[in-house]
Length: 91
Image 1: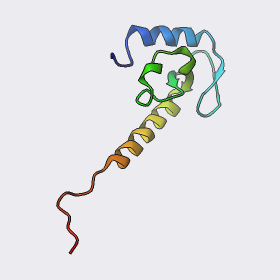
Image 2 (image 1 turned 120 degrees about the vertical axis):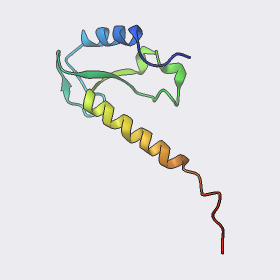
Image 3 (image 1 turned 90 degrees about the vertical axis):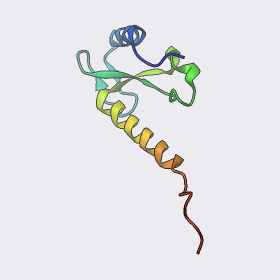
Image 4 (image 1 turned 180 degrees about the horizontal axis):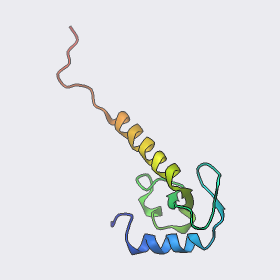
């Protein structure tokens, strides 16, 4: 499976830009034409990779909202996966 990026994403962004103004899918603020925005996924790609290119799973998001949400999501995943130390013992 190819990752998110390239010409395909550019085309999605161009189509989405034609529909602006639209509310940010995360904060609800209106994204106006010319403002920086990203294509957000309603259901995260690592949860449902088959929905990566599904238009119904896309929504416009303010760039800061998208980047902040991605950082939080990644940090939560890393904290959840943290294994216990293999050298710890009950004394």
